[in-house]
Amino acid sequence: MDINSESLGLLLRLVHQHSTESVKRAIEAGGFDLAPSHANILAFVPTEGIRVSELTQLAHARKQTVSEAIEELEKRGYVTRRVERIDCRAKLVFLTRKGETLRPIAMAAGKQVDESWAALTSPKHIAILRNALQDLLTQLQTKHR
Image 1 (cartoon, rainbow, N blue to C red):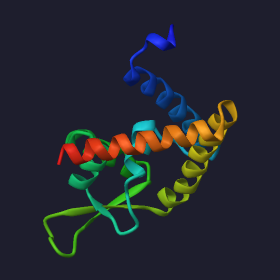
Image 2: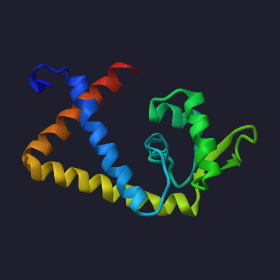
Image 3: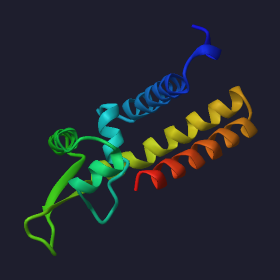
């Protein structure tokens, strides 16, 4: 594969796959059983809980996909759903103790990926990449509001 001729989207996807696999291995080494798609959902669950509709927006996923992931995460003991106090028709998703225990492991694994990439290239290259991606994301989010 000639990397210079590949699209930016494909390059981002391939790098993302590497990151996801690294984090998955760290999560498994910590004794947790979690699919990468589930980790994507857990990353957006705040301490105060969140509605599925909000998770759908943050994770950029379909409501059915997020609902199925929440159901599986609940079966595995990572999240729980409770009725919202303000609107009794709505349910909020909360991390359980098991879910809270997983968060620092996943975050440390993500940091380790960043550090290993900086060692492979340079801290400066990673900082430039991070800033460029943050700028692009901000512009994309502003454009689509």
